[in-house]
Image (cartoon, rainbow, N blue to C red; front, side):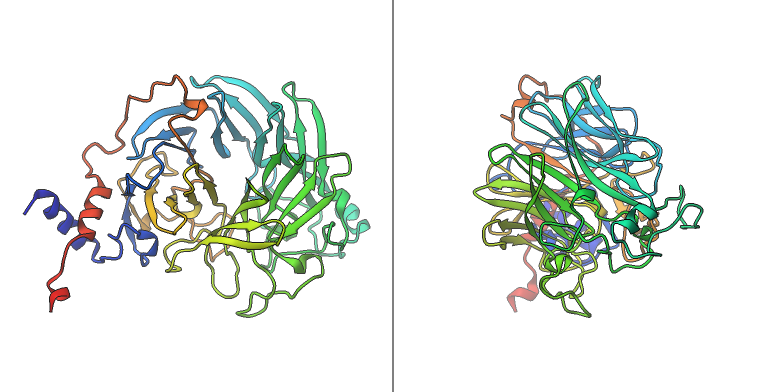
Length: 470
């Protein structure tokens, strides 16, 4: 018997379940421990390239090869807010987190462009007592940048716009959070040029109402005591479409994606996910999703051919919490492709998450809450899988156990956040322009003494059992 087979048998005995060892591990049952690094790698079907991650509690961003080795590291000042992406010029565009002025998830404060050697070549800050940038941005073809931010409105201002009195905290109220907050924080999107000048903006505050192209100021999450509803819409992604001169937006709290015109009016021309938010369809009820399709969605992205991609978190979904990656046809307003794990315990992230559509048609999914990345084909086969070893205490760990789980600082009890969270990952093919001329031959093996788990798991999945021959 080969040493590889012996090792595979040892792995199977250690984990005690054949399901965990399957190359299609996203169907796995719950487990209290898992190795970190690359767990599945189908070299024929996965998109060969490099994966960019920015662990949310680390000041470094890492570029990984297909076996999880570090081929480049950007050492930066400050934690990410909340992710980074590699621009076509080879620079890193990343949010930077400053000290929080409000406790809402996603607070950032600044955006930086960093060259290959770690030098900041451009920076823009939105960080004062009344305006704060948060965790979404997009570099436009003309070199300008779209940034998502909040603007503070007092209780009196919100009530004058139609907010029900008594539903927002007032200055001095004990919100139970540090730092405290009050009033309503309305999302807006600003376009800044290379000199940091604001050349266009879109404000949700200017589109309040109950119509299909408006936002109900009394729309609130079903969960109680969630920041006193001050974080009203919680926009978490923004992407520009130059061909149509439109902006695609994802709102977690409205459970919808929107398209708005990139002009002076900024009219909402399309929305999807939760018709009850604007008086259509039926609201969810006990064990019934009603007309609602998305639950806490993230990462709305243009795909072309009048389609968009979304990460549907499935948070607070009456029929069962479960996450999925979906493709939506804009014209029909219907989902035309989706991936959700067969077993609900295998893939779920209540917060954050992403789905990047790759050049070969595969989809790279980021399941944020457990630092779990996987690549899935159009026929829904998992062909690459990775669990981040980078922990919030600065360590890297070869094994992730339930002892690594951390208490959710926001106090929401149904969310299991562990210490290796990744907000959004990106895969880049070797011919991507941002990698041109870069030396990626120097590899840092994160755990030199660890086995190649993807090889052991693949071998274990091929083992026969005498029970199958009876």
